[in-house]
Picture 1: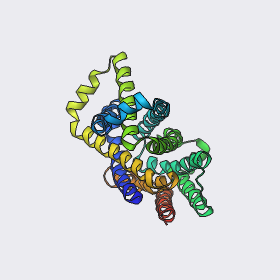
Picture 2: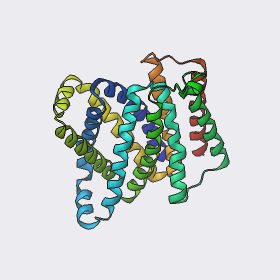
Picture 3: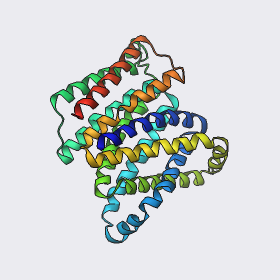
Length: 288
């Protein structure tokens, strides 16, 4: 059952990150992230309101975990949107493969989950591929000419690894619907308050009217991906659930090449292939 949910996460996340890039470039990172989280807050509310009341009345100690998870998700989301806004989808997506070791390390130290030598070897191969796809040219090493958005993506993976861990842990402590509703509501309110304070709230209505279809598709794909991942974490160790769902990188990267017509140099294509193959093999091995 966990593998089935992870499969849904692959599809929805692959499409979702493709839509994140389009939305961030068209309406801006803040408006896109607000719309996505507002969508989740509305959709997940009917499935979680009874437990929300119970948590506030009978289990207030869980609010700290939910609040911390929401804050980390907010930081990771802003970094991820900015990386995809200014970078190539086929370059940025492979970097997110590093979420696997970050999540695995947290799961090892906090929950005692282990990664075997074969998995470590595959993760190392993935990192090599990431380096290849992230460098614009061999001269870039000397000139420090790294592809646009890479540094935002590197910062995002650290936060996203923590997000994977916190969402999985919170799903076990409460439920997938609770952590997703709480985090979506928290992020949407924070962004709304910021836009109101900076007199930019009108951007929400304006962009919604002009890009309703795109923003609805973004909200649906990304939120359902997180729901599928959270459900998979109920049945699988966090490191395995993350490894399986991380195969969505192949979907997003290929969408970037096929639809966005992104051009990569030979060594970047080799790196992309290494990353995709490494993630797929790692996913298969951790599922056996």
